[in-house]
Image: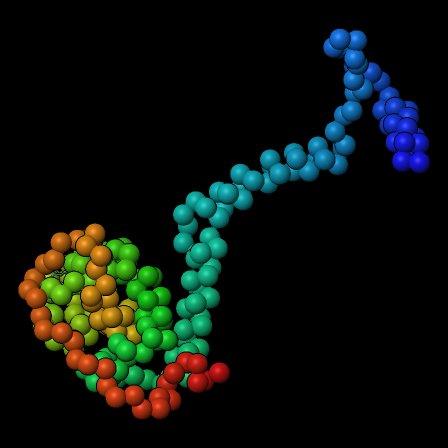
Length: 217
Ligand code: HEC
């Protein structure tokens, strides 16, 4: 039964295949099976499509790659969350509180990735700017100094001032993220600069916080 089927389909192929190719290997000849037209067109289409696509999305223009678009969505989402959390005060107490709020640190990390990585390296391991993972700081002796450095900059603008570029909420959250980086060094970052400072204040006692993003649904 299956043999018959096999033969039938073979002879089908033979009749539809048309011409034999010229070459013969040990007396075995092959049919000339051209690729289907649709396949060839698809292939040609891909060749035509790929270079402009690659050029458009991957030539380094801001905002075009998938990663950039993802960042933009994140930023929009951030605005939404900010509208729920209200205006934060850029003071020590608020900063200490947010340094221990994991869910908001993720937001701080997104702000850091967009604005700070170019100078402070991935995860703050240091590049042009100092390593933010160790216990040594140049312009910071208390946690609140992070806010001050962020707002006003440092070293005559080598560290830019951010108060006109980031909202107060963003400054608080990215400062909290910076504070949380302390102690995450694996030794591969930029060598320590400045002097060693006392540890950050402990986490404040947990009270039911109305500002947890999760609690906002
Ligand atoms: C143009 C490069 C540049 C960018 C962008 C930048 N920084 Fe800096 N940052 C520096 C430099 C350089 C210093 C060291 C200044 C000094 O020598 O006193 C510094 C210092 C700091 C310090 C103090 C560290 C210390 O040891 O005193 C903090 C905190 C900091 N930056 C956070 C940030 C954050 C957060 C961002 C993103 C919002 C950011 N920086 C973006 C260059 C930069």
